[in-house]
Each structure stands twice: as C-alpha cells, then as structure tokens.
Length: 109
Image (tube, rainbow, N blue to C red; front, side, top):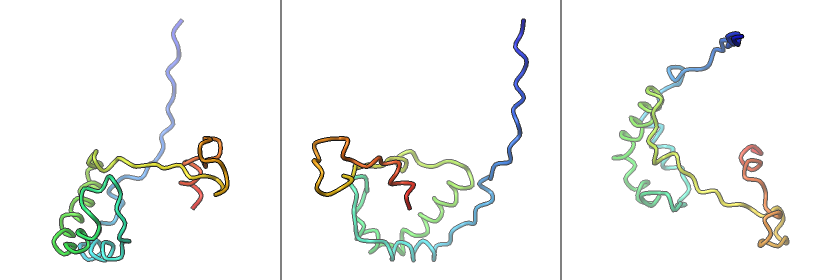
C-alpha cells in the first residue's frame, strides 16, 4: 500500500524584491545616530565607524541592498552574543532559574 501524496498548500510569501533600497544618506544618518557602544563581535570600534561614516556608508548601503536583492547575508554577520538577564536584581545570579528567557526579551518590545 502506498502513502498518498501530501498536498502542500501554496502560500504567498514576501520576496526580497518588495524591499525598498536604502540610500547612502540614510545609512550615514543611522551611523551618526548610533550609540557609541561596542560589542565583542564588532570588528572595529563604533567611534571609528562614526568617524569614517562618509567613506563607509556607500559600501554598507551596497552590502545591505545586495543582501536583500540576492537573499544572501555574510555568515559573519549572523552571530550574536546573548547574555541572560536576572528577572529581579535581588535574585541569586548563580541559579539559572532566576534568569529571564532570552526569547521573552526579544519578543517583549
């Protein structure tokens, strides 16, 4: 006895062509308004990016727009550092049960 073929319902999903390209001016404004914080994954310090925003903005805009158009994104930019946060300041930080689920943090805003 053979298993009948499963009918996969067709779903219309948004394509990357529906995105609006970013401009060099928009990227420059975003870089300029960024907080001067640095993460261990940052290849260069934020203050340097801000200082060189006029030179970097065309490349960043091109990278962003090409990533959306092709559906490809550099794997180095797909990494994140996730630090658990204690639910309350007074809780024992040596106990994992006292930390907030990172997924709840991401979806709470």
